[in-house]
Amino acid sequence: MTTSNSFDYSAVGAVQQSKAPLNFGLLDLLGKSEKPESGGENGAHPQQFSLCLNDLVPPPERKDKAEPSKDKSEPKLAEPDKTTAADMKLGFNELKKLLGCKDNDRISLNELGKGLGDPQISGSQAQVLAILKARFDQFDALDPSKNPKDKGISAKAIEKFDQLQKDVKSGKRTDAGAVDFVNDVESLMKQMRDVTKDTVRSLYADEKNPLNSIKLEDVKQSFNPNCYFYGAVGAVLASDPEKIKDLIKDNKDGTYTVTFPGKDPEIVKAPSDAELMLYPKPGKDGTWMWVLEKAYGQYCMKHDQMFRKIMGYPDSPISQDHTDGPGLFDEGLKILTGKGTNWALNIDKDKLAATLKDLTSEKPPRPITADASFNVKTGEGAPVWGHTYSVLGYNAADKTITLRNPWGSTPPKDAKDLGDGKFSMTMDQFCKYFSKISYTDK
Image (tube, rainbow, N blue to C red; front, side, top):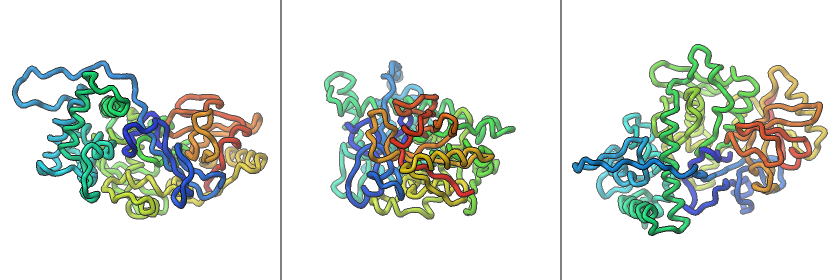
């Protein structure tokens, strides 16, 4: 469940953290082993899950600057298309009022979560809210509370950040930690404004024919470490996009009903500005992927809490936060199809090839995901270790398998790059880098 390299807004880790993903396998919860890149387990094929908290790789430095106000009256927060790191202080003060916080209060993660779905918090205020949520630990670290139970972002922390961004802009601070933090906030602001500007707010851009809007390129994992879910969505979509469409009903009142097979319906509100910003995806085809993830989060809030308890994560009012844990045993495929799953391991290449041939020859083909191994070194041509990928096809003639990274980017270096995270590789390469495939019962 690794997070997207292009749109991943990680809220965990130090400012200086690596741009590579951080992932943990089940063994990590019981002992300590690996480092970066999501799920799988040191050589043990079954019972694996993946977690990646990948930090954003900042885009090229912005050249547009917020115009200084000529009005000497009370300063106003810049419009979303002109915000910079210099707007965080004013935005924080305005956000506190919208959230009903007192002057000396810290803004807690719980308060940010409650404000996240509020449609009244929009534009630049939503932008600031989403950034504070995405970088909560980093802002909190600027003025940490003496009592862990009072953890939150204080006005003093924002004052320190305001001074930090001024020092970076003036060249007074050139250390990597300070520069990276300020540039990261600038990059988040730019990407957040682009997402809200480009997103079609209806469920489907083509409402008359939704299948024209349910595209693989819209399945892009972002902030949360839930690659097991996104990999499964890509696999089901590649198998039969009609099954994705059948999950979601537009209630025509600003809400949607999502019914996972065999489960009670989940009613979710249309995503707010802040939700669009915090969990960004290509929005030109509508909000269906946001709605699907949000509904799954609501389901997880009511059921699968084991992972969060083991990790000691605080409770969160944000449904999407609850998707980062239950991917132990193909929960993505199971929740989307209502069926059980089976595995084929890489230890028998011929049997694996025969299984892939049979599964992809069916009409429609069976939904299949693949988990990268733990014993590969990401960055040396290997895929993101432990990460869950969608299997898109298999060519029995030349024994090549086609997969997709749910980030929509970052194919392995020695694979054939097909764009949008898609790539093909030989079975020898696949068995070297991947531990298993998972597929649904017939």
